[in-house]
Image 1 (spheres, rainbow, N blue to C red):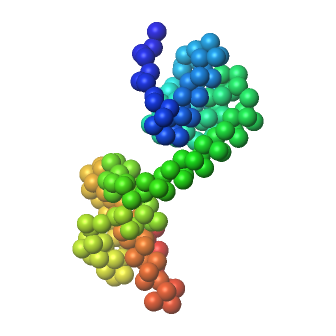
Image 2 (cartoon, rainbow, N blue to C red):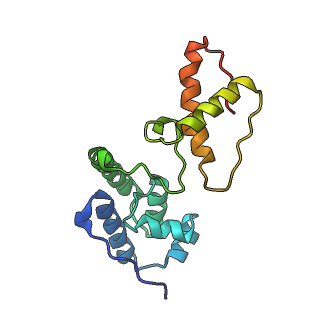
Image 3 (tube, one colour):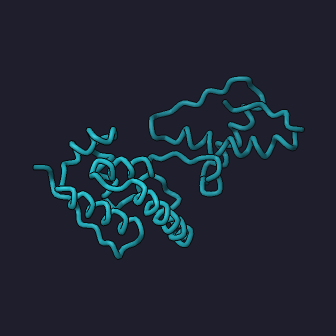
Length: 173
């Protein structure tokens, strides 16, 4: 027997409400194990478990695989997922001001450059070197922020500089 799932409070928000509904579907399907569901769904056991974990909103393909593994109506659940996704988006927009800039080990992307800070001097040095040299290697320990530096630091600065240079700025790739 697998370990018990952590309780989810459906009143805590749209992600938790959706997770509670997925759990109810699984219960009505006879409580198949996540291992059995994963074999049917083509996703990992942990992906199936996280879909109903209530901590993050599952993707549509994961949701539909979960539903199909439980014998549910995928058309109905796709509509439910889209409605919940819109609610999650509205909820996230309202709480954006409360989001921490710390992303853990997840990298920053170019469109998140306004949230990427504290590396201005390093970014400026990298921009200078890229302008002077054809190849500029960036290396460091895993998790030290190399990808974030390039994606949210260098790429937006190169995009800003490109119009000023007549669009002839070299790529960082």
